[in-house]
Image 1 (tube, one colour):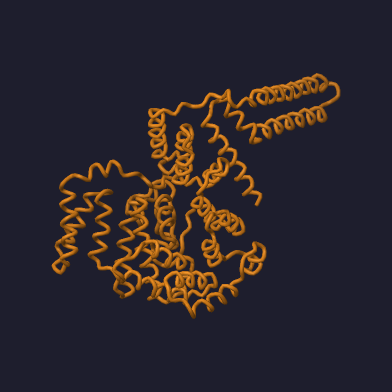
Image 2 (cartoon, helix red, strand yellow):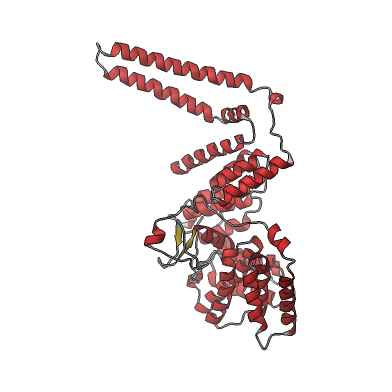
Length: 480
């Protein structure tokens, strides 16, 4: 708790400096004074100087310390008086809010600031990029940049300081970090601050493996017992017929740690949903989200592979939506691999999966899209509908009309701080990412077999769309 408080104080201080970047120099000092940063610094400086002079005068001899203690006392008095004068001058200059000179945010200034922010972000300096957004009064984009740079504490401190709404993603990411550090009570506190947190708390209950028993943990944090969740699940099971009722039943069974029952019901609902002519990704995510918190390793091999297969497909859809190009191909390949390993047929055909993968790479990597479409059109038993779709996509690639979409496509990749710095381990112990098959630069995220690894950025992107390890063992990863 002491370490958490210190880190939060540091994050809050840096957040204050980020806020100060929006105003002039006088406004920046005023923000720091009102937040108590300069007051604590001045008081600590005066106390340290006074204690230093006192110890010096006490330890010196009587004959030699007269002049030294006098000079030290004069220096301490001068420091204290100068600090008081500086503070009083700041306080006297701060009441007139209307005399501040605001930053003129013309379209040219905004454009330059955003270009500088993009350059800083691509150089793995998200804090400086966030400052560029704050200068032109764009705090939402600043928080988003800090999240993409994996500066979670700063993102939370900045959103709290500026009272930015709709920061549920920040709170969930901080809760995941608290969970990784074993700070389960703090994770509960973060989730309760979110607007919609009931299902997130129930999934946290299902994943809890702290030092104390769950009964003590639930009593200390005001959570329900697992027996209560099981009783609610048994009562709902008799009348669950619609999809929302089945989703709620899966959530209750997951919180009660009824892993096998939750997996069986979830797999049945997922197969039924994907077999329909029309379905939504939101419904698929609502079914699979609770299954991401159960102990998949304890399930039978057949059920385990199916859970991982459906989660890989959901991860593919999510990563294509978010633009996580580095992990998209891995997820589509995992769906095919897990279907063969479980000896089951995926509800969607392989041709449909290839079309979905190629449709994303049409804007992300046209050369890869052409390769996928050529291989798909070579299949002899391809349906007429899939063949027509592949030919239409191929003509669109040849027309060149996608160049505008390529330039207009925004970047949503994760670039953690200092991730572009070179590392000596790359030459001594070279390794390739299991996800993208590219050389791992800088720090790496080691998986459960202690041999496979991927970059920190790939691990964060992977964990944001799928909680399970890319080794398909059922083990969960948490790089937050």
